[in-house]
Each structure stands twice: as C-alpha cells, then as structure tokens.
Length: 289
Image (cartoon, rainbow, N blue to C red; front, side, top):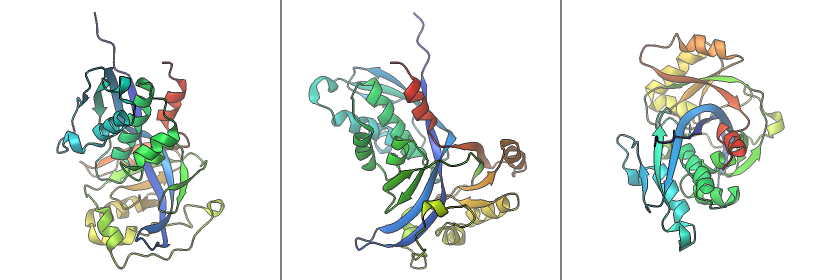
C-alpha cells in the first residue's frame, strides 16, 4: 500500500509595520503600539498523527535541540493540557519545510508554534477554543497569540491588546541582513526612545509612523543599517520589530521582484503579499476532517 502524501499547513511570517514605545509600566515592561501585518509566505508543517505517545520532529533545525524547539514545546503543551484519557497515547511525527530565517524578527518560531497548536487541536480532536489556545501559546512567546488569531492586527499595551484591522494589500520585499538582534539588549538600552505619543489606528499611515528601535539597532548592528540603506534607495522601507529583518513596500509584486533581482549575490530575501487573514486560517476553515 502506498503511503498517503503529506498534508502541508502554512506557518506564515509577519511584519511589524511600525513600533512605537509610549512609556514604561511600573513592572518594567514597555508600553507599545504596533501593527502586525500577516504575510502569505512562510514555513510549512505537516503532521502524521499516531498513538505512540511520542512527539517527534522529523526535520530538526540545525543548532536547535528538539527540547528547545517551539514546535515540540507547543505539541507537548497541548497534549499536557488534555485529560489523561485518551490523550496519554496521542503522538505525532511532525515535518517542517523551513523557509524563514531564524532571528529575523518575522515570527518564524512563534508562527510554527501557533500552527502546531491550531492543527493538532483539530487532528487530535482537542476541541479547545482559539482563546484557550492563545492562553497556551502566550506561555511560549508573546507573538504566538497573534498567529493563533490569524488576522492583521493593531497592538497596544505590552502587545497583548489586539484589534483586528483590514489593510489595503501591499507587496513586501523582506531582506535578512545576517544579524541576530537581541531584543532584551535593545529594550534595556538607556537611550531607547520611550515617549512616543499614543496614536489612534484611524490616524495610522506608514508615513506618519516609525520604529523606535530602528536607530539604535542600526547603530549596534552595521549589517542591518547597510541593508536598510540599500532598500531605501528603491521604496519606503523600515526595520520590523527589533530586527534584524528590514522590508520595503511596493504597490505591485513585479516591482518588488525587480528590486529583489538587484540584491547583492548571496542575500537572503523573499517577496510576499500582505494579507488580512492568515493562509493557515483559510485552510483550517475549508479543510474537511
């Protein structure tokens, strides 16, 4: 008997179109505003459910131990949240097509965790709500709930207050400058701006927003500064989150591809469209179980 072909599930990237730091709470956390743009490009995951009581990543990531991988952590967390019977025998072989660069600030690991939680919730018949899954996901990383929600969103507070929004579709050239930015380091710097005025989403435009971390990251990570300077020659551009990825915005895909073709040889980049609903959620809504 021939083996069934794998069913691949999207694990999309995201961009922070802007990042404003409005202040600091008494507990030390930063008060933020940001806009999370979901993309139609990312990794892919496939799940082969079994009853071995084991969670196995068939395609491990080089340099990342399975115990540290958010995919494994998410599957184990979901399994442990269920009643002992019959979940104690649930297992899964998980396959990964890794396309997104690690450490780029575009949500690769968080998106992988969210896809794992959402898909195994269906395949294992866990029947947990998206709210329950978001609560689980938040213990794995601050961005996981964004991918569980699966919508482009305006974020406030420490990033946990999410308002679903709809944006005109744009095309993005995303460039990874081969630097791994330490988020904790950037947020600990005394010279980081922390007094940007709060805006209303209705007043948002790319032109009247910015990234409060960008100047400092560029100062400490020359590769990021170089990549951003290169993109700015061709289109409105910005760093996403605390980096390291930078992106340029285009009205049509051909323009983005034309500029991508001009990148120095060996550059890591991709072109994607911004979407208001994650491709994962579109598949979840249409898939028949």
